[in-house]
Image (cartoon, rainbow, N blue to C red; front, side):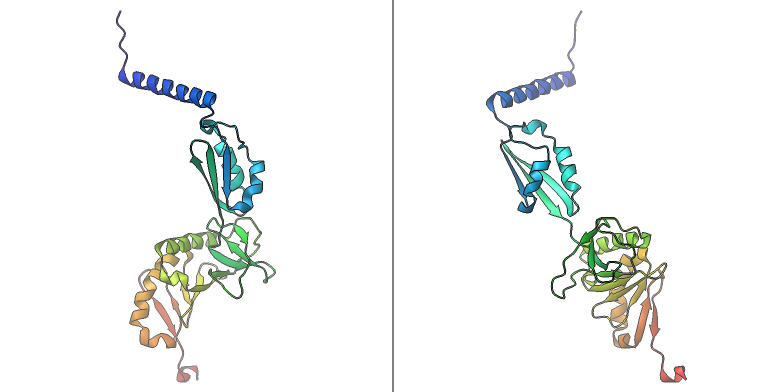
Length: 246
């Protein structure tokens, strides 16, 4: 009886032998044994004592998933990356959550941040600077909890899209009022009037806005607000003339 060894089986066998041999070599020589763990930023050094990474462990069998999950549960953390530095070190890089927008707490005084996950985070205001859009009309904000307002969730997705595209108007958004039931009222630095749009079409509305502004440049001071909720037209509300008031 003749046995044929198929090529896939032969390749798999070679890989298995290679892996076993590498593991044995690492075990007996100390190669690929963890000696150094670094973490950035340094303020998270205390976290090293709480994660299951220890010098002496094999780099080939580190409990990476468990360690990263623990660090990601940190209230300020948005991303954790582990980088191998062969033959005997790993580096953990932690990215803190940063606000996408700001909002006031229920006391109307405490300024909070809301990151791209929709999670409320602490925020320390520098001088009188407001580097992120301020969202008003939100209620029941709880630190380190996700905002439950459905309109805000839709709006946040739109803001992230604008931010990713490098839209210039996004950088100039000062305030977004979410108080209306189905709309947002947007105030933009440099514009003498607000813009009304649907939360789900907010991104598209701001992309259409520059063209409208160029056409109505000479009449901007006469506009009270513009309504961009329609997909086909832009409605501009003008100031009433004295005769119309009487």
